[in-house]
Image: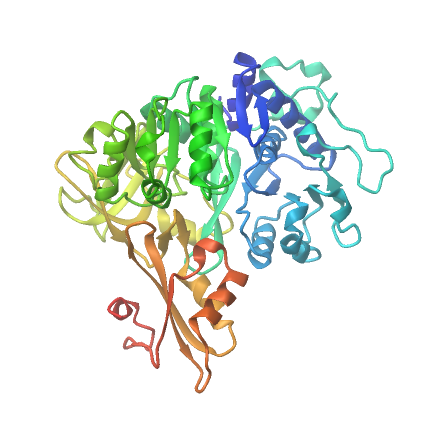
Length: 544
């Protein structure tokens, strides 16, 4: 049996003194992270967290985020890595939806977090990092202070005597002495690989986020397949600028800890030259990115003058890289293996294009990854042949358990397979396959927008727009964009006589939506094109 927390535990046993994580000025070894994750696990249990309880992490990319996720898993709970850009309304919805029992956050997010107090009845503990004096003692349910990576304090912030649990024993199942362990750590009551490890919230077709339930088996299977085709080894050093709330960013840490590599964790790609200097300084071998990052990278001056001699591979997902960008990357990084990939949160990864094929098939996203089957079906679910456009179907142990609390949504995408008792994932994405089995993305079956690597519900943005005083109707579509994958285009109709500018609308959106959901443009219409059922005709809007 293998669990996600074993990635850290096994590497800590094999390579205790190796640097596992570099973040800012912090450099932590596997044994240091393992010890601190143990402390978090013990503390969560001390605060009443039980097996399969949900614990949310609402932090920027940081060492605390990594320690927390493994600590939650060691406590046999389920972690939620939430986007640091969430607004109060969506944060409240997610915490209530999954009945989160604890939240780990930073005092710099109080303007968002303070709005949930009193709204999430099941939330029993809020653990803060940052400035202790800023913790709202009166309003917050059971506030707790975590003094950074040094460990959690045992007592509530109201106590005058705080102690750190650095002397707590290790939670390493492979070295268990069961007679000295509490019952929750006894092997007979431990998590198994069918238990949930995480819930990742993505935008839903109704406008509300939906939680993708992933088991330990799902995540171990995906990580094993991906690291096998990337040929990862212990000497790999991966730079990660992607948010840990994005499964692509999260798996950079999980996979590196699985094979004993090193992760250089950054908050973003906002300052690309600093990232490049960090890559050279740390001798980075792996560079995961999305089209937006690669577009910025290729726009830098004198890129060919930097020493990227240690870089072994680049990976891209979220949207297909424009062929022109691939050609430029091949010229600047002739010895670097470039992997074009495709995936979705519901199964993590679907396919990859072997680097040796990228010059022959630059617009393909490859074939199914190891330990997985993929094929294309028509509208009645029958397999189609080469060249025929249809819906992509995925079969494998990486396929999610389902959507949290949404049985009808789950049944819509997880359907019975050919063999008794199995289910297969209908992705909702349209593809064609060539004679050799290589896949080509053709479009989305529904109107969900995929921009900047995020799945975005048009309805959520439309609801935000319609909440702005003076707007009568709103519609949002995605339009093709070489860098973003799809750009968000908003259409609005104002109430008679109401004067609203694009600047007004975008300011409103910035105050209520995450950055990646802000429209690229706003078009004002006197009237919307309508279908025979009097619904806004979004297909017609594509011609505007």
